[in-house]
Image (cartoon, rainbow, N blue to C red; front, side, top):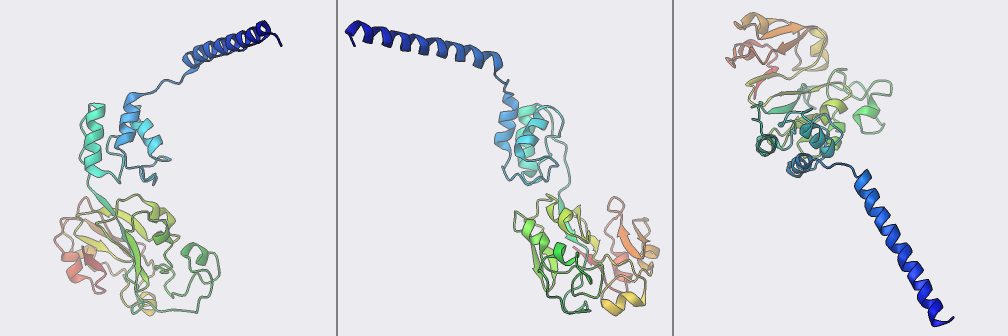
Length: 265
């Protein structure tokens, strides 16, 4: 090939490259997705656990929702108040004060207190045990099976099985709610961190049948309800329930509970 041919080929290739680069530049400007700087700043504040405790698919989705005004600045349960303050500064709004919540296991049926009805030899997983006849080894059909499905889903090491019952470390719990949604018996709920008293049972049986399977279960006697002067505790379906918005922490209900199932935090 002659020198002129080489120069021509190089010119054609270079010109083609130049045209393509110009076209790509124009296309990138024309079709670029607008970036919300607030969304990026909010995302940088979030811890990145992607736990879903905020109700969104992950931190990216939450950041987008906050930036769009579709979620409150304190929506991240993991970050808590410090992260809410940072995000409120970015969004130019004040963060509403919200009470810290923690997970609570409504069962006191430890190995010594809860009786077994059979020998279970299936998968040691609460969800799996619920799918087979008998639903685990414990005689109380409402109690914690102790296989730790809740432990497996907790990203913060806040819940462990102790003596056959799941227990929550309130200092580690961020109220993400994964354990709540995982428990097949709905034994776990989110309660106020500073709540003085809690009912540690979920049995809906009444009286003698409760004691036949667990020495510490709520028998539905309504003694606690009669003692409360603030209408903060009622017995529904044979189980005592506390209205935390009304409870003053006086302890009258716990003092009179014959089963001692109303515990002080």
